[in-house]
Length: 187
Image (spheres, helix red, strand yellow):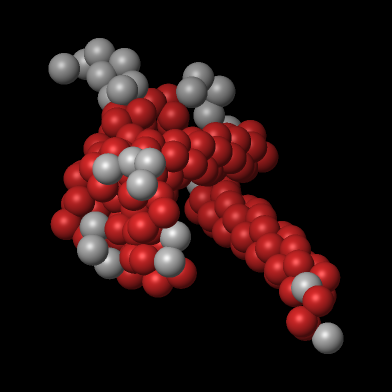
């Protein structure tokens, strides 16, 4: 098929599948945590086990959905900004050529269902999917860009993502240290 909107629904399904698999893993871990700290029996007085799991799944899947949606929006913005700086494509053919990569994310999301029991497996599948998509996109865009433009685009994206991740890590560590310093027993 040559319909340009053929892959338009795949990002939504991909985000839903990744959110669901990460949410199911988080529900399992949070139930175990609630049992360890002794809150689980109190929660069971108000909700059945299935109701509690469904409630937690909705909450965690929604949190992951928002997080993955934000990452997709930020990722596409960084990518298109890099293409603005380093691409000479005026008609937008490069964006249409790389849209087939949505299938890679979709199959990665389907594969994540096999890693629900392990956070490491879920994270490896997610990162491997991102890496394969990046390689596919670079390959597809190489037909439309010069070598210098490709190198510039790749370094631009790596540097911007590295700065973004470092900023998030810094903020989380500052918040963590601030919370620990405010606790009365930390002195």
